[in-house]
Image 1: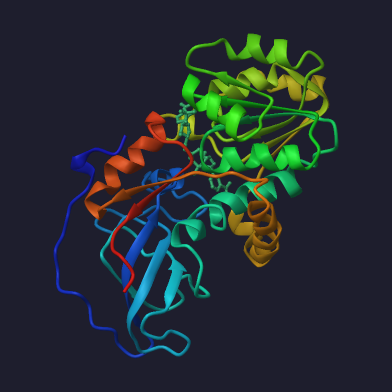
Image 2 (image 1 turned 180 degrees about the vertical axis):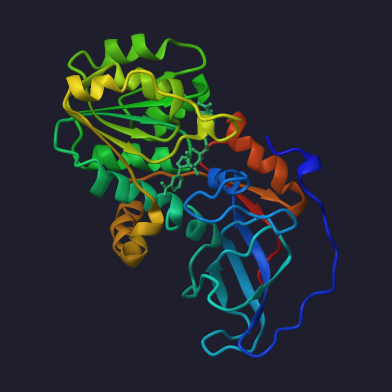
Length: 321
Ligand SMILES: NC(=O)c1ccc[n+]([C@@H]2O[C@H](COP(=O)([O-])OP(=O)(O)OC[C@H]3O[C@@H](n4cnc5c(N)ncnc54)[C@H](OP(=O)(O)O)[C@@H]3O)[C@@H](O)[C@H]2O)c1
């Protein structure tokens, strides 16, 4: 877990933008399990955050002063501001001006990497066919809650969620429309999967890795597909965590495929245009939980690991002007 001694709060003068730079006020930060992955010593799909750097995080910021074409004071910008009050946009930093009129929290949740990851996982990686049996872990979280609903909309025959409390399981079934949900902290996941999916699991949307992945591997149908979206159960581990029963992939002629939302950046708009009518028609429900104050970012990140939240977690840093 990220503890106080991992981080330092630094106060320094607000930077003045040079030619080609933009000064932005940070408004809201996306709290993502990958924030923790970037703090590891090894590089992942992005370089590790170095000691002394600002904690890397996606978010929405508002232009205060611009010395770059395409950015005007007041514009809202989606990018990687990190855990700070002001962001100096430089060089080829990832940054896109957002059209006016959109909810900031929606831009970081259902229309941000959270909803869009669920979209491409289900639409592209899972190769889901009508009537198939789908299991989603992290089912009450940001990505998982949307992925399970998309699987239902695409015609899955049975969608089973896995989550960490009875209350979350009730939300997943009663509000999101999953067919069943296993509380992995109170029930035997292998036994419950065997009972709920007697003919095996066709598609597994994996957000957690570890023991739950093993339980699913032990209950696969022939030709199953596993979309490896995340492995949050391993992100705080000091050593890599092994999965012991990958031989089931052979027995069941199954496929596991990792994917990264960054590979779909060119198609983001397709996902947003696909999700928007489903949201408007009330066919997708999503939850966001906002925590007020940048100083709460570290403990909010840890809530992803304790499970002390439902849906997407966001840290609000300031109001837009
Ligand atoms: N591939 C990509 O491009 C991509 C993009 C975005 C996110 N992701 C991944 O997708 C996953 C979900 O991300 P998210 O942002 O939507 O987070 P989230 O699901 O909203 O939050 C994480 C959830 O994981 C569960 N969890 C924590 N420790 C666990 C453990 N040891 N075993 C089982 N469950 C555990 C907790 O719920 P419980 O109460 O149910 O335990 C927690 O609420 C993460 O693994 C993340 O890295 C991947």
